Length: 85
Image (cartoon, rainbow, N blue to C red):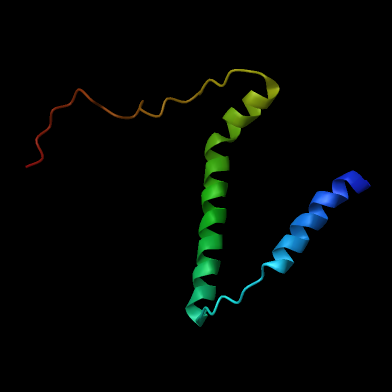
């Protein structure tokens, strides 16, 4: 790391250290479980999003256009008019 890049980092660290004030906050044991639950939920959301858009992402990275091969609405019958009695 050069001296030019090191100067802003030192300034930020000294500002953070210089303006340190106590928070006087109470963190009960439930906060830890909430943080773990939020972390697990975030990982689940990211993994489902990646799974959902994986083929689109791969096609985008290859410079191709994504075309879905399966028709998700093929099994649905919109023309039947059965009464649910």
